Image (cartoon, rainbow, N blue to C red):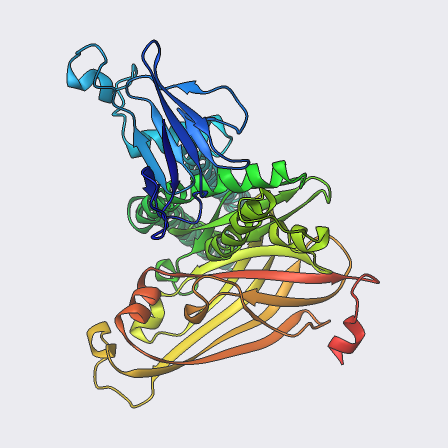
Length: 491
């Protein structure tokens, strides 16, 4: 037999040694059985071990590894088992599934996600369908508006033609001739206004379609590819976090959540809010945390989830007595998996930052959405940035190495639903690496009146953040009578 274990420079025992926190000191054991071939069993309680997407738990009977089997150790290592004694077959057959898919790392991750309810492609498809539904709805609204205008235009034409005909049938007097001329001029003026409005409506509909298509074909697709890579890299940890929570009796489940973000580059000055909603979109991947005991959900940044995941694995290692065993406080344990809060999420949003690269000011009324995707309100966001010492050219290349100062402000807030007592905003920035650690004070008015100022040297990391990054926003609220220390906080 051969042990699969965590790498330890002081360990002299021969074995397969893997260097990662997700690997237990004795993670698994491989057995060579002359009759059935190579078998694999778990070496410790709570050791994350998967064969072809199915879990191998401690105490279960050893699993026989078939030629080409996908074996995942912890949340960092994926192997394809090759049995040299297997019947010689064309190389392609052991590396290609029955459906013609190449059996590689991506295949193993997809298999793991399908069997454990963390389906990467399903989440991406869901987001595409949602955006397409938004587009279809808006196109239907525009078509209906255009139809109403055309009907009103036809009705006005009939009314004026009727009046003109009545004047023509009367005895021709100078007064009547003057009245006829005035009616004809008024008819032409009204119809011209309707025609102008129809042209504007058609142009707006055409812009909505082209902007939406451009967003799908350009930045949106880049974000889809990035989100797919992020989800593929994180899904073993997500599956393992769910397993640790379930084995600890904690009814919390983690999943992916795609948040669509506004891309301010797509804006046309003077466009109305409805059309702005369908401008090219960005995507931001977050982790959704569902608590069946609390009947509630939370959104975590990827960085926050990874911070917590490291603590979860350390907790699981201690609980499994692989490091001597420790006692745990239940409330403290729960805090690893779920954040107890006395405030609730009103809505979440995100916004791209590219206009700041050109030192352009941005003012957006950003739509807030709930976990379900339903609109829950909107918040006014303004952004501005300038070079500390004026530059002759505002090109991105000139910003490199220069110091800039800027302000992010949150203003008017509208919301649907409950009767909350006060609101505040949480948001991410360059210095938090995606974590929403910046926040405002709670206010009772419908204006957050919060400004965040920053001063930064334009190094490659910061410029890349402005070009590719997204600022995540959460509007949160205290429910009346439920906020401990709320009065003091407001004071």
